[in-house]
Amino acid sequence: MAAHKEAIEHSPWFDEDNSNPLDGPSHRKPVSLEAMGFGLITNADGEFFALTPSLGTILNDRLSHDGGSWRVVESDKPLVERRAGHVGAGCTGRHFDLYYNQLRSGALAIGADINYIEKLEGVYLSITFKFPQLYEFDAIYNMLRTLIVQISAGTVEDIQYREATLTQKLLRILWGIQRDEVFFFTLVQNGPGTVMFNSMKPKPRERFPCT
Image (tube, rainbow, N blue to C red; front, side):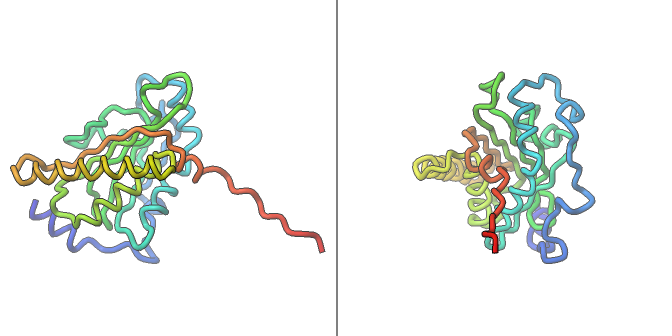
């Protein structure tokens, strides 16, 4: 834990020369869900994968807002299988390493809601990172809120509900830390993914009047 704390405090910031780890050598974008080694792949899984090739770029754009320190790097392997304590192990979808500045801190998986098989009707999000007590509260809360907003319906009511759920989760984690029972933070949420899918729609080309 001491080494992780020191790494958090001294990890280099992302700057103009190293602002997006998706551009770095560690980024390995998957070719297909089959190539990632998933067994059962539903129609909904395939539809989600086809719609989200730019998901990593979208997430990093949102996470970097107002100088945020978190980033994700997509992997061509199911990373969550290697993350102790990750409740999303085995989930089919896009998998990411989670970075705090340039420190690899955890794992993130996003995929089709497992309650729907034939058609994409929603998405799930599963995230894990180590030693939550070593980060500033605002750093954790803002990162998690950014992610859960992406899978929300985008309405005030839905976002407020997710914020309240997140606050309750963080309070339970704090209680566990006080009892020396928590070493990993895990969060799973399902949602329609309206905000995320709207962000990935191609923008209409701007038309200029003829002169």
